[in-house]
Length: 123
Image 1 (cartoon, one colour):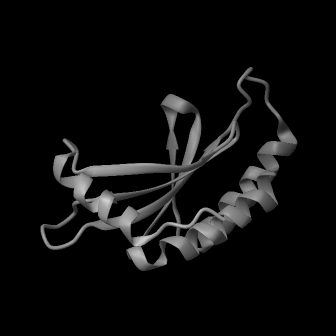
Image 2: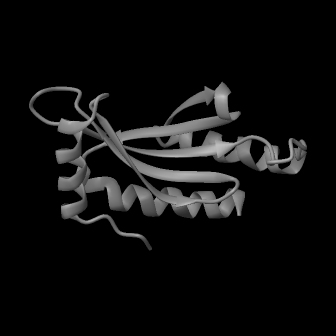
């Protein structure tokens, strides 16, 4: 399992200060079907918020519609939504972003859970 340790969190936090958008993102895993990443946002001057994102592509690279894959994707989306993830559609990549905000102490735990769910539903 790809663990996130505290120096990584410090790097994310420090990088916010130099980011134009006051947000940083680190990719943890990427396949042709999905991408998992972690990031931080400067929502307040006191402390940043941390988030975990799963980006799910809705179609294959060649544009073919794979109905069984879409059915599995819908099941995955329902599951993560019940676990507190917000869902948003991204037109530019024909993807759905699944995001949850959490404390930095829970990132490793949440990553392990969502990675397991991705493997279960999307292979």
